[in-house]
Length: 322
Length: 248
Image 1: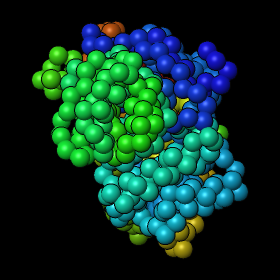
Image 2: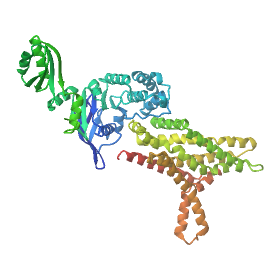
Image 3: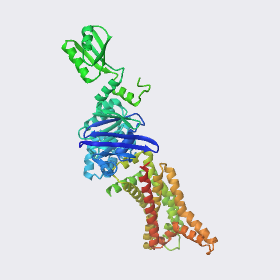
Image 4: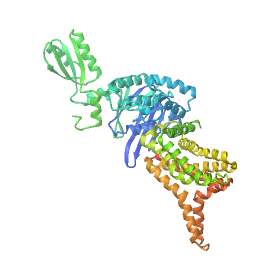
């Protein structure tokens, strides 16, 4: 393992009787990064998270969180982790400040530290105006943010958030994403989610798991590129103002290009470029058009969204992949 | 240690927030009040509150399961067990914290009977030593009963099931064993050794015979040991259940 990794999973596995929920996964999450943990329902996301947070021991393999072994140094791991479980379960009869104080005492925080941190996390999570409320009377959005505030209370180096934006309205989702994005640098965040746009907006890296195995990992851009290369229907769409035939031959001459088709002809034409669909080629296309003095209006890879990639690899050969 | 008390404090306040706590308190007061009015506060009788305490376990059999049923069951059902178990607290701290929280509420419940001791001391001069030992006996009795309730609550996520199983167990050691032993005493002959032994065992396991001495101002270590080992056994079993759950 590298020194700067905050979460290291090593052949981590979990079986429930004969059913294998997580099957030997390995990954490393560097300090201060936000990593999206993606996968369809039942892929083993929550099981993995529960092992990392010491809720259940692995059947095989180990993991280290904040430098501590999840099995032999479980208490240390739990001290260094802030965890928001999937449904953010709370005590409905308690008041918000009371609940946070209780959670602080469970983590052996001093009275003074508890008071200070309640103020700080309440501001961060925008729940300051509800500190005196009974939890049972809070809206779903406030409860979810109270769960995040609880996870942040002891200022842990590692945060594990299981679907933190579920049940929030669009404004709250944006607010919560900004909150999570701001955590980068000081905290290592493992963010489990279904929402792909969330991952693109917030995460620096993505780990995709399915049927208990890691299917892909990398930055969102890397994954999109991989997707474009796998997807036969993918291509680069270029919209240019310029002489159609000249543009076509200029693009066709670039290395890595197999074929150039004209999709829409006219003074402003749209071309479709097939070939090795990587970032280098896109830069070359843009450069060539600029050099010749034509006007580039749009340049994008079609059929290479993170969503497409997700569907492709979690459902290989399935209906959706076509 | 402070974490154990944090959990205990939360459980105690949880019982005050719920209507069940107040219902338990009200029924207990009603029952003890009846005992007081019928057996203790009788004209011409000596001021002895003993009978008031001696039969307390009969009502506690039905009250304590309601006090303890939610301790773990509700945590399982709501999923809060996940936030609790992923906090930096040991399983033993969780078990002891919940036990102490319920015991705290139990102490408040039995302390409510001080009202009647107060009334008695206005009209007469009761001997306070038996009162003191009676409360000690009640405390030990509570430790045993609460630990049994805690154990069954740890076994299931259904509160009602937890309450019913602890109620049945408490009925067995609180009434059934002693009753059976009493019947056996009439019919068996001293030559049937194994039946005599069986009767003795039932009598030892039953709560009733262990309560009498306390009401008379006697602290017998045999009885103290009975309650303490019983409570320790069920606390240990609770810990085993909690510990084993994570391997499933």
